[in-house]
Length: 154
Ligand SMILES: CC(C)(COP(=O)(O)OP(=O)(O)OC[C@H]1O[C@@H](n2cnc3c(N)ncnc32)[C@H](O)[C@@H]1OP(=O)(O)O)[C@@H](O)C(=O)NCCC(=O)NCCS
Image 1 (cartoon, rainbow, N blue to C red):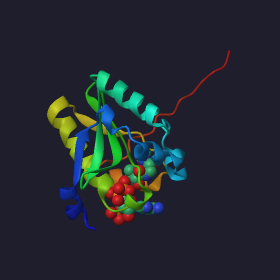
Image 2: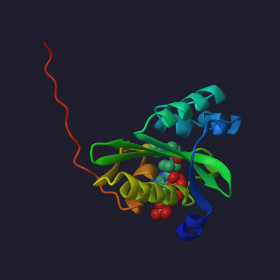
Image 3: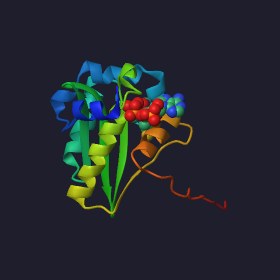
Image 4: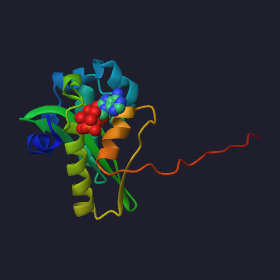
């Protein structure tokens, strides 16, 4: 399916506690997801808790990604000084690679510019996560120079 077709089918809606379902929790059984997502919520209770925390935080916006009204993934925006940081997942492996991530990132980034009036939108992506790097590039994101952390032990 082309990106244009997907654009009209993908809707972002702010998650509420009733979106914490068994299907959502089951996404975390997938190996690829567990590899790239640091914060897994593999039970309904953990999903509910995660949504509740996001709702209580004015600097966080957690949307569900809905395709034809079915909740198939999440995208989160965090407000930092003059920037928004995005993170996302498409939970159902069968739904990956068909333009959903592209549509979700574009909508979320537009929302951040418009409502938070940030100067830039960023995402922390593992360099080996090729699909994720690619999806952000498709949406116009460019790599930032990586900061090197140095330390000196006592
Ligand atoms: C990363 C993720 C959000 C992307 O969403 P998506 O709906 O799959 O992405 P899209 O289909 O919109 O775009 C993916 C692009 O990567 C390309 N791609 C997919 N697999 C690839 C691979 N192994 N190597 C290179 N490119 C790849 C696709 O072809 C597509 O680009 P194209 O349209 O130019 O062909 C989704 O795959 C996912 O949830 N993965 C697991 C969790 C994860 O990694 N989250 C991101 C953490 S930052």
